[in-house]
Image 1 (tube, chains in turn red, brown):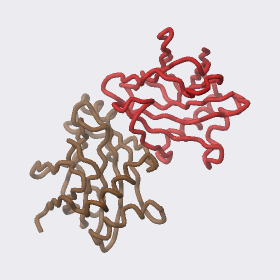
Image 2: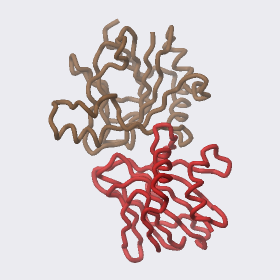
Image 3: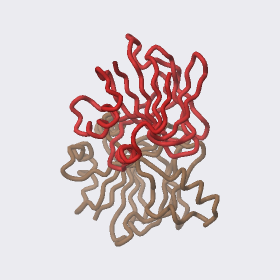
Length: 155
Length: 175
């Protein structure tokens, strides 16, 4: 796995962050995370023809994937204690791909890997790259109103 | 009519079920609001620093203001038909995620400029959150398909739930 801080130029990141965290950005409620119905999150998917695709173009252009399998943003509201999702694979049928997790805001939530328990803290404009076969989990924030990450599955 | 009127089973079961299904659906879009009440960042319940900090980090909600020409208006037409307002000032859905303890918003009126209107709060799901009125501390529990109707000048507050993942209410200001 690879962690890169200050991934996008500051002004590009600021615009990116502003749009995703904007009060005009829509979110869909999901009553579960992975297969755990005790926790929940809000998501925003970017389909190939989405009118707001322009928001993520700077990131996609920098990553330069050969193909995008799925791109979505996850929002988990603050919880009283850290809540970890189940360890999971993003694509269970075929793990021959890459995953990028791009952190939109700084908070004390984190990503954790099952095999070595390594934690990657949520730092705004940080990106985490890893292979699709690595089981991982997301952990909620307790010190900000929300934890927002972009999750990209790609080749 | 008394100042505060509560009506249970407001819509017929089948109408309510359809409305609830649509509003709680994963297809329904929500917007994240940093502040539940305008100006909250500069006030607090008792002006203490600790309350200010607590409110600052917990003071948020998901909302959706439904206004023409939104196709989502279709969902709530049955409610409008029953309330039969002369004029709608604002129709807003509020979603408050579960909290560890009940979190109460500050008491407020919905429209600061003119309180000569009615407010209807329609409860979309059942949970242990509630609406509370400042003048008599009356609590109205969140029961699905319940409506509370009161005068716009009555200061009130919403309180989050601790036993469901979300508390969802529809708030209508009207004449």
